[in-house]
Image 1: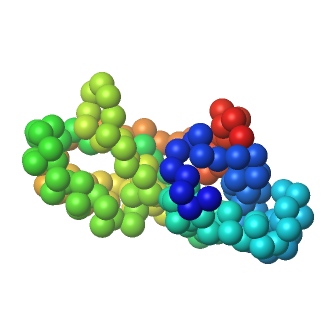
Image 2: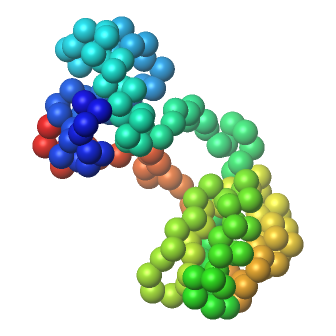
Length: 165
């Protein structure tokens, strides 16, 4: 397996089954995983290690209910940067990466430069964060915010149906 390239074509049905099983439950033991995908433990372990080494699996984490932690506000913030040249936005990117309240950041097409997902305890906390922090980031011209009024679907599970395996 080590000679295979890290492309979707390098994945066989067992790799895809491992990815699907671990997305559903990353706490599976190797024995449980092996049983679910129909291989013995040793080849299953080797395949998981290969998926990790090739960068298909980038980590494992717990899904946590934000509301139980008091994070009642989820905001989508479009950030307009002063300049969209790479060198000018680099300090802004670096600053955004350091903000724990920002759980995701994407370059976007259309109006704006970045789209952020920001969590806060309440509207007052978000207001303070946007005024004291976001508006003071390097090269920020303006911000535009929309608030989540309810989650229809929130999942980190990636679709795997397009993989041939």
